[in-house]
Amino acid sequence: MTAFTSRLVYHPAGFDVELQGAVDDLVRGRWMSTERLLSGTARASGLWTSRTQVLAVAAARSTVLSDWAREHPAAPGLGLLQTRVMVEHALLAAKDRRPEAGQLEQAAREACWAAAEEDPSDPVPWVCLLALASLDLDQARPEHRVFSGDPLLPPGPWGLLDQALRRDSGSREAHHRMFRYWQQRNRAAAVDFVHTAAARAPIGSPLAALHLYVSVDQYRFTHYRDALARRQWLREPHASHTRRAYESWLAAEPGSWPVADLSYLAHALWAGVRMGAATDVFTALGQFASKTPWAHVADSPAKGEALLLTARQQAFAGRATALA
Image (cartoon, rainbow, N blue to C red; front, side, top):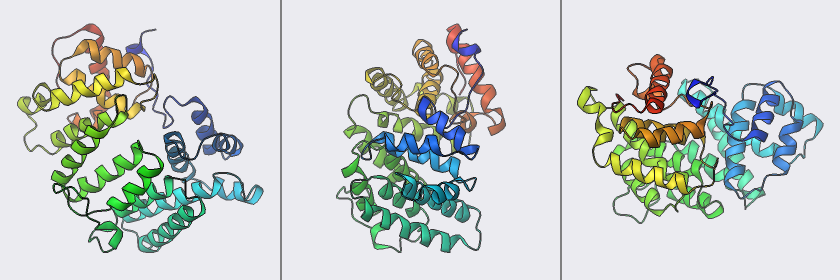
């Protein structure tokens, strides 16, 4: 069966088969596969960061970590997952403007600092502190107004980013957390940060896809999303950024780019009418799909999947036109 006729699968673990099983077990209240998975995952690695992120989101919706802690309180990775869940709860409470948001934020922040002290080699506590930095709207905390050393970039949580990258130099989550931090407060700084980060990324790194997130972000906030705006991916600098991201992906180890980044790449290639290259990426994705960027660039979020299916059909058919 060809890729574009496959049933779409939206799974947070993406291509990581071991993680898929652990996530599914966590949702059902079972934690043993998660314990096995984390005990065999190197701390100072991108895999450790991405796996704990996905597992924490799954665990945040239940009491499974409390059950695990009663059975194996010293299990590898348990304490860090609990910290991750605290950060998730703090972010959600702030988003919903719940009265307990401040307390949850403070507790999560203290847990992050404790985790960083407990395992100095672990990048995740620093990534979590970057996530919490977005809640400090006035940059009241000194660690959120550190000078970057780059005249184009304003003071921000650069020290936290540096600490994360010292432990995992290619940390995808750390870069995306920083990108989202600047998206919320200074879009020009977000673009400048992405330029710097993508320029420093080695060939094959999924950080080459950061520019594609900027392109979608710029389109989302265009006041007049007409035919001209929808063709931005045919113009510079979007076309060059798409080409570089595609070339970087081709040089990467198969399966090393997450589904979300491949989805952004597939969209950019399709919208830029590079149907052969788009077919390559859709084939690599197979049945896996991501809600974004399709929900962001469709006429409405509810039409995102329909746009994705149309794009896949056009790419495999070799259509010479596309509407983003």
